Image (cartoon, rainbow, N blue to C red; front, top):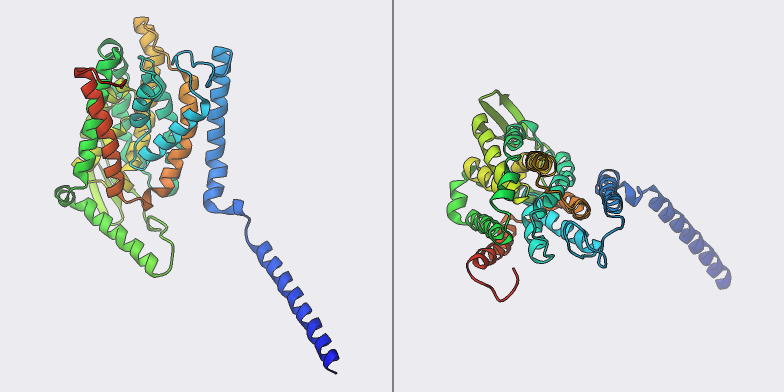
Length: 397
């Protein structure tokens, strides 16, 4: 009897085990595949084709322009340097990520890295850098648009100013800043001013001065705390966040976001875009390093909002400056200032990926620590470049 009972028990346990396995398999099969995750789906559909497309374009341009694909053994002819392609991809990725988090293109970081580490410091480095800063923000642009950090009215007049100013910058670069040492000194001054502003932004005085920014940040922090209290993952900006235009004219633009409203003078925005466009295209960078501090200081815009203006601005400025270097300058002066297309495109393919990733993680990165880190790096490099102009340093800057 005991044996018969034991046999019944074993059969029943086996049946339960079988049912549990079937249930587990059905449960797994009912879950959506990994490729259906929203972020991964967005990356595969929007970003990966763009990254691969730019990389393939870089390979094609290099082959047809030079007759070979440059790399560690073969130099990039215009740049005159030998560097592995993976190095350029990595440089583009980390500079694109770091700068897109604060609403800027990778140029202000990749330019000094290119000049000092890779030793590409001729006039052609500026248009080559603009190739990267033109393509780099597209990853962030699509990412921020999905996060509703998007408003073309806010960007429009800045972009018009950039179209007017950026064609002038290349002439300053060629006729005034063609020597690498003075050019690096100017870049160093820009980096130093950028780092100073980043340090000022984390001081209590500055935070008190930009009360609108503080109120937005406090509301944002409370939202994150509430989500964590509810056992939810902090998913960034609120679901009802949107940058809307409440009024527009040839004199003023008004926008609203999350209960806040701000007004901008159209002539002032055009002038800002114009002057930033001249300086940025002369250096070969996107201009975000100047535009971000201006928008934060003058208008108190939080980082989550100003990217709606800075990302389109960088794209427009870069393409206008690049056309001036590659087309206008040779036609009017006979001076060839062609970019190294392959070099710039390889960097851009990595920068697109980094910028997109930044658009997805910006809302989780504490601005205080980010600005402290960026300020330390840019300030150090800036001081080295400026010192190199006045004294002969024991190392090559």
